[in-house]
Image 1 (cartoon, rainbow, N blue to C red):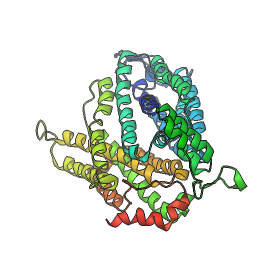
Image 2: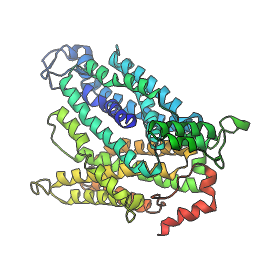
Image 3: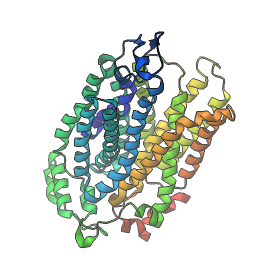
Image 4: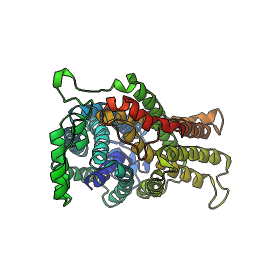
Length: 469
């Protein structure tokens, strides 16, 4: 429950710049505009909006600073994905999660009370750095608290709560207009979450995979007792995990970042998953930009940005747990259909009809790629061994951010041909779907804990042969 509700806080931090960086309507009076200092003396804001734009007059040649603050946040997210993932595989999920959460709250308050734009921009970079790593660690920790049979449900609910958090942030922004107050209100729940998360135990799967069998048993016994199953708690007994390495023993800290590209099986999976994550992000943000041409109410737009994704999640839960569909086929199908929706969006006129038009097809495509995005989170978690799971997710998430960074530049390809942007999105979705079919199915298959298990011939007979089935 904490892992789910925590996503609301994560969503508020991710969407913060959308509202506190809002650019209101303004009028420039006649006068001396020879330099920027003189220009801002003649600016009159005609809309009742309090944001960093109105406080620091980020207009005209200074307008890029709003986008820069958003870019710095996502640059921090990208670095955090790569840095915190391997770190949590080395020293544990809980210490990395709590440390990142503590500093994100601190830097979040630095955002709210920043005395200048420079301090504000730096704080957004640091918040993004903590947010990027913590989001992955939190996702993995939530998954590893429960049995693999529940991973599809917990992974889907985690992503669904994030979408709800986006909608709630839109409502929060509607009632709290001053940007410093809004930033404070959005950041304050982090204090409560930190105090609650201190009581959480370490991941039993991580403890087991690192050779801390006794501590893993204690966590499982604690879970059993809290679930009211004292009899089961007394019977919990684990064997030593094959290939497990205790942190610090014999100078060996177990598998690391480089194993993702040097290990034969991991290299194949990592390269494929990186492209799938990249394509998911490229198509998702590309369709988001084209979903609606209406400016409308910015608070309603932020809320709809989250709510439009919600129908995708029940579809995910239904299909990925069916034997005839599974993770692999469902993900590939959603990606392929999202790519086809891009193709149809390119062919259908904007005003083709009340229901069947380019905008409705774009929204349908966004729903489909949202479903694929959700599945790839769950699927990637199951494809990587416990000892290197966060590092794998970090690399995949990094390629995802690259897709998000490139997406805004694709529309400029209209200069070559009007249909070129959606052709790029179409080919990206379909090619990623086809590539995803080469990955092994993980439904009802054992989760690997170490690289030795992944490399064993027994495991390959169980899992890898699923590619041909």
